[in-house]
Length: 234
Image (cartoon, rainbow, N blue to C red; front, side):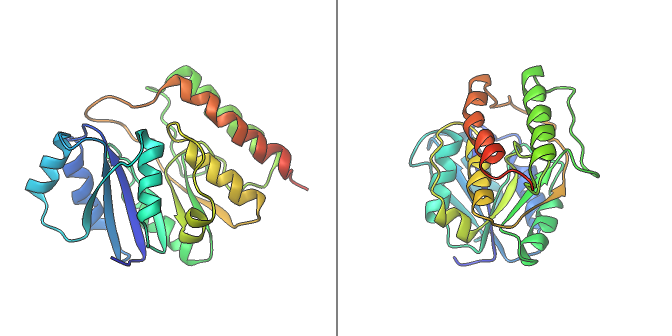
C-alpha cells in the first residue's frame, strides 16, 4: 500500500496500551497513512487485541526479521514504500497530534522532523526518568546546541519522522535500542539534509514496564561525537 505517511509501532507485550494508541492515531491523523505494527513473537497478546478490536485495512502486522527495537525498525524500513515514516511507541498517549505537525514540516521540505521535549512548547517530564538517562539527554542537548546547527535540541529522542530518501540512503548499522534515531540524524546532518523539530511531551507510561536499558547509552556516544566533530557550527 503506497501512502504519504507510514506510522511504525514496535510492540512487545503492549496489550494494555495498544487499543488507546491505535484508536487515537486513526482518529487524529490527517495525511493518507498506514500503520505498521512490528512484533517479535506470534504469541504476543498485543496481536490478539489488534485482531479483535480493529478491522482497518490501514493496519498491517509484520514480524521482526531481526531482534529488538533496532531490528524492528530495520524490518519496517526495508518493507516501507511510503513517502515518510514515523516511529511511534505504543505507550505514548501524549503526542497523537504531534504526528500531524511533523508531517506538515515534511511537506515544507524537511528530511527529518524531530519531536522535541526540550524546545519551547515541549515538556521533558524527568520525574520518572533514571538519573543517568536525564544526565545523558541534557548533556547531549546542551553540547550540540552550543557547538552545532543540528536543527534539534533533543537529538536522543527516538520519536521522529524520516523521509523515504533518508531510510533508503542510510541503512541502519546500530543494533541497540533507539540508537538508530541518532545514527540516521548524524548521517543526514553530515550530508547536509534539512532537519527541524516540533514540540512534544515525554510519554507517561500507563501500563507495562519501560524497555529502557542503561547499557544502550554507550551506543549513542559514537554518533554524538560524529555530529559534534564532523560538522561544527560556523
